[in-house]
Length: 251
Image (cartoon, rainbow, N blue to C red; front, side, top):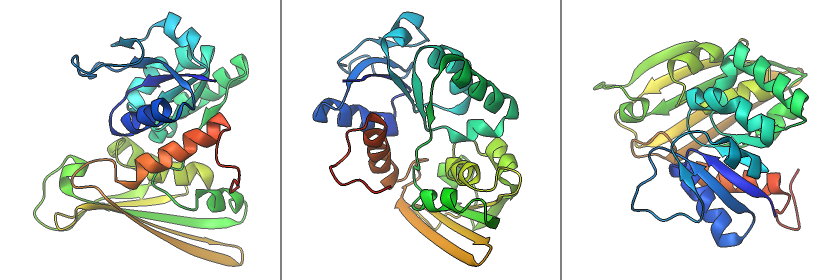
């Protein structure tokens, strides 16, 4: 049974925490989260800051915090265990990407990138050598983007690398698609704030040598950064990382 630590334990982390404790598919050995409610009981030690002794106990750290917290802790994590990271926008920082890859090589670790809100990420990855163009459009409520506006407004259009810098908590979908496909600088992103919606909507269009496809995803958000589907997706990703998914596995 793998021992699992949490770096951040909010909406996604909380779903994964319950999934682990209810299904016995691992043992939670620590939670690092300064916002963990003092009155809430945990099955493990809870800390505000990194604790090297706790990291040494873990086989896997699940990061559900944000890209800046991930950067602060990346060396301690990969020195001691593997990483399942949800702040995929961190890879828009070339220096962080190089550091993470070097640490994986130095310590023999793996970084797992979940598909999150995106369906068909495996298809994008499989076809990446033949894909020429990828365009991603996300439409969310202004509240989920941390801005205010009274009408539908395009708040960003440019490369995915640029989008990650402007909306690091809202475009993990874009970052994952770019990393699976043709890269941060060739993938194009558009972000729309729309006060008329309470969903997180993503439209992905890809064209390649002799093929084209479009993906449309809508997940109830109600002003939150994370949609309703993502926590379920996260639990599926964790099961596959732990190697204890259902007897029939889609690959």
